[in-house]
Image 1 (cartoon, rainbow, N blue to C red):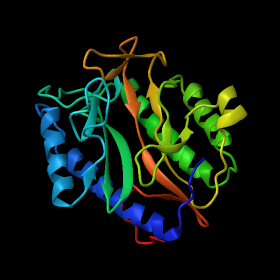
Image 2 (tube, rainbow, N blue to C red; image 1 turned 90 degrees about the vertical axis):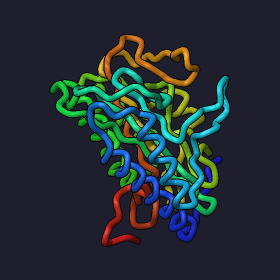
Image 3 (cartoon, one colour; image 1 turned 60 degrees about the horizontal axis):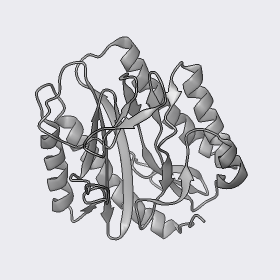
Image 4 (cartoon, helix red, strand yellow; image 1 turned 180 degrees about the horizontal axis):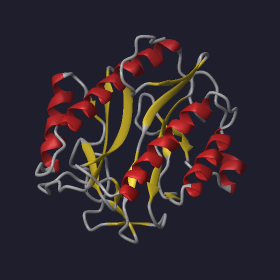
Length: 261
């Protein structure tokens, strides 16, 4: 069962979310052809350390503990890519996912970036994936159940000619990175039967649509972490940590605003 957060707790989560936003600005400033993804990861790790934040991803258990503070996924890689000496090339797209815990509270966000000029259909994939996250945030302010939002997200992606990744979903977030509830970007019989939840003040969730140009199916690569599309076509990933407040959705990992609650 999901836990509802107080206004004070949401304020503390906002501080973690702002740090995640700043980490993404740092990463974005480094993106150009020839940069190794390990260099980006090292810069984000230093940034979190300098600000007294604990990275959420490094050491996550698996067949091999996750070795980095960011997930960096290139082109057909969907999520959980491991930073390396691989250098960015013109026309690549790079998904960066990272999160931290600051003073006991978590923030988590992801962005997919074009490296230089990309093909028009690839840019459209990025636009649709960012667009479906924007749609979800807006819908969270007027829908009463998550299934309503998920249905609209799925329709938006499919109407655009792309597919929604179903192997990975969003999640509740608070003291821990992954909490209840699970937050799918599509509506299934299981969601309607037993997984649905109300959108009420105090709910904090990480919404993270992953959208593929071709098939929704993914496979795990030999490093035991990286997930890639089965057909080798590109994938995009955007994520925000979002709180429901009495005045509507509050994006905790967005840029600073003059009208902060």
